[in-house]
Length: 399
Image (tube, rainbow, N blue to C red; front, top):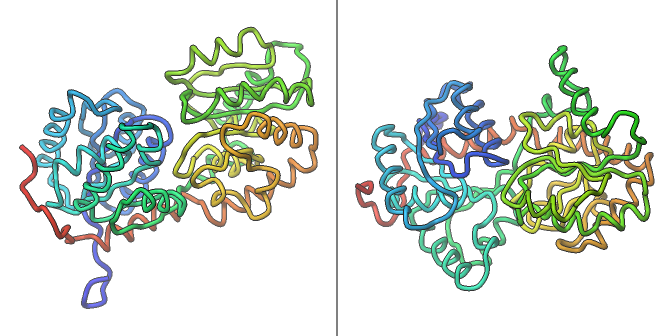
């Protein structure tokens, strides 16, 4: 609120984003959609040719090509200078940097000159070990002085940052999902219905194949998401539920290795990257995400909004995302194939339990994780920060 008690106007904002795909892209797209509807001038700097660039352009946002890779490296100085140039071009009142790489470049470029919001979407130091992890923690501690607010998507993510020595003003704003798009039934219209039918048919396998309960895992095929742990657990699942089927939806750097592990198992299918994951959730009996680390994963929220029970690993955000009482059947230790197989086997063998868990999950997401709640909380944060400057290092934007 302003000193006179009136509500502050929303500032113009530039979202700086790397990566331009996956859950981060979906979060940013939802934010941009809501902010444009609220009348903000919104711009997005992200790698060209990504799903995010196409999505926010379709929403009507100004987009700027920022050719940044996922990892720090020899191009870091050039990437930082390029982002600084884009910031000078856009002249936003506030910059919202998403994920570690954008958070690194944006804060190096700005150093507190204008309000900078940093949203880690899971801490980078959790993805590495040894010296690299120590360097990442050190950078996050240093960069906090140039950050008007760090936005965490769960209390657990905030605690992880604090435990690493990151000292900054915090806000916890849970992820949200579109509860119309992700629902137990497809939205009205023949295209949506056909899409859902197509998704179900693809899960079903070859024509005339035996029916059986379907486990779906939606996520980038990479170490973070833990599909290797899921495949290690799968033989034990089949020992309990022989006709179970598994579909991995997504693509990524570990795709070839995961396919090699699965070999010719007829019960495992790789769907690849898909434009719309909603039909796959609706085709599932159980949705699983065996992550090694997260902030608060979107896929379980999307699955629960679709009325499906989930099995997730006990990483940051998982407990906060589940409905009360779902921890025992739905939460397992990370990197524990035996526990994962046992949880999946129990749910696959109990249709009534799956139905009740799915119904409760849908109601839970409607009440706590609707994307409109997330958008409103971020908008309120922007109002609070409008005109704020960090207290240290107000150097000119990097040249």
